[in-house]
Image (cartoon, rainbow, N blue to C red):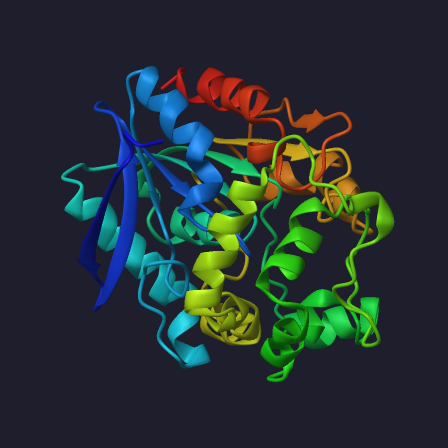
Length: 316
């Protein structure tokens, strides 16, 4: 870990913290919520050893990267703009892309808007979802899953105060170790209570790891990360021109069997029933479902995840 290099780059009007290791073809790793570059610690070391230049930024709003206050500064155009400028700063024409959770959603936008910059994309956890011209995201989710559905609850400007009541460490522990399949809900009476079976940390997440995350979130707060959710409806409005657009990049999809996204009603049918392949024509037919794994597979099953990533990008 000590050999990972850290620097700050000015991209798209913000200062972005970047962690990197190695020399060779660039692999760009994009983290999700509530994470940091640190979620890729195992991948940075492993892929540097395999002859790649592994690069993992803190996305805008997170860690040591600037966090503009306004929700409107977190649209897909802003975040993809950050990545386009970051790729240019690396001095390469294109990158291998690996992304998870919100990073995966941003990864899909990067592939849609600038396919010329992506050699191949390994997507973890969140499949592409085409824009539905008549279904605005948050009202649709509210209708399907109710007001307590986490994406709906994150719209609440009081969410930061709720998180503060429990403390960063308890909230991060709850989210990172939760293995309950299906759409996550945050009941108002006890949204971040840790159930007894998760009182101990899993083998893949040490107290030091948790401390690193919680220290950064104590410093930065959660507003930046929550603003990605709060910009969902705005993204839907701004991307009307991409209705019906297909992703023209080679893609590998890897997901945990217990993943909260994969086990959301309708998702397995989309992933395995032909819908995903129709929207992403260059999707690798062999979708990887990791038995017994949950959402944070790049940490929970680091070595196995690394094998799947390497096996795919090695073809290009």
